[in-house]
Length: 503
Image 1 (spheres, rainbow, N blue to C red):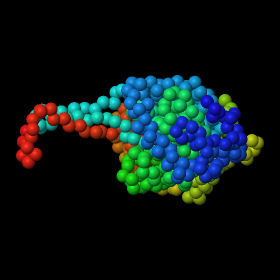
Image 2: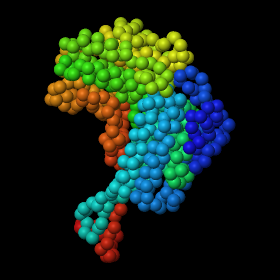
Image 3: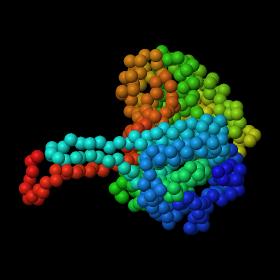
Image 4: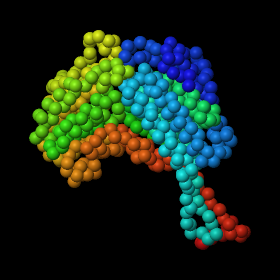
């Protein structure tokens, strides 16, 4: 693998089309910044519409290539397993690349990269288990059945917070089915996707099956989302951008799978294990510096324990270590980009202006090396209400608002009083209450006495403005395949075309 953190420093990275690195036709490049210093550390190609077209045509040709089209599903699964082996082999280097690109903790990225191969292996095992079915019909001597086949060229636009993990959830099943892919990684974290493209070729996946077009959303993303050669889109990111991509996809009458914003409720009842609940809330909103779609940034606490909970949450938050993402003792690294830091600061300021109070954090570190990067303290805001702007809009940063409630009915109303519906969490010893919550809350994933517990074996997705479509589990195999109906008349009889047969 040539795309390593050491080789990236000061380099120019090209597009990956038809199994080769190629220069952008415009000759334009963009900088990628190290969040710990705010300084550029490599450049990547800015793909234009012509480059995107070249990548899509390469993917279309790969669909027809016998080396990909005319192999058994079992052999396709073997190729995906080989890719899993290579990702595991290079896990630590891939982790270092993402750590430099987006500021996520190196120890977290190492664990993530070592887990990602399991997802490829899981879907590799499904490659020869995507079955059609036979259909009984009201005609004698007729065989009617459905085939499952690849949907075609899939266009993927992935985020900067966990590029390879987010890509794997749809790339692995797409490869197992036999689709081909054109992916645009975020302009804020590009390199790990280019590294994966190298590994795909090394695994024996034919050229053109997996293509990478890098660049910003305004140029590259827009060109990809408008291309008529794409059969289905995958997007993870903001609801605002998701609407644009869905609109473009609709112009070409193709479907899209969207995982968009979130403003997830995290509910704590008086009977909960207080220490476990506090740790759960901390994990749910401060892990990854709050840069997760499912962040439990609205915390609703039963009034009877509100003061004790806030005191414990503030004490636990004070022990969180902000530091360089490569340091082993760091709990929270920097935000991934300068604009995100400004956004977080603006939301905290708006909360204070509307009457909330900072109980912990609330500032950007100004001393030492941390002052150079895009760091922000984990922040707890109290005296908040569900109508405040920072409680309504997705922050994507380490900020949580804590609000008391008095009854289960009030809690359910507050939890559902949002335009989003991605995830929700509840802490209680009352299983009846927990199950009622799971039934009544508007969320695609519900966690009970845990949070951010994800598994590639289970299907997940959002509702409301958090998007649509499912990822994970066997359901995603249906998402990226299509049904073809086949009808065979084996009677051998000659039928008058102008006589209607009743049976």
